[in-house]
Length: 88
Ligand SMILES: [Zn+2]
Image (tube, rainbow, N blue to C red; front, side, top):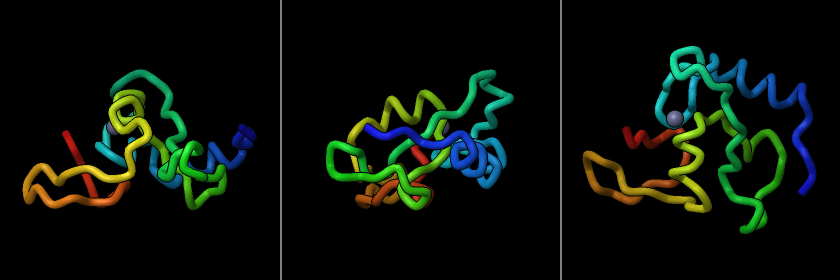
């Protein structure tokens, strides 16, 4: 797996204003750095390009795993990751 450059990682975290793009938790609040989540996992052909990456807290990253959809907690509709869904 090719790695994500330090500058791209920083740009994505800056764009997300240091918040998890899934649950909006601030990385300062959880006291842990955000990780890069691949929206389409590499196991499904996802790339390390900017459009496939988002800033995620450790918990959301673990929860999402290799899934690409989840059910909206309110409407129960199946939604695609990320950004249009919050599961906390
Ligand atoms: Zn999160």
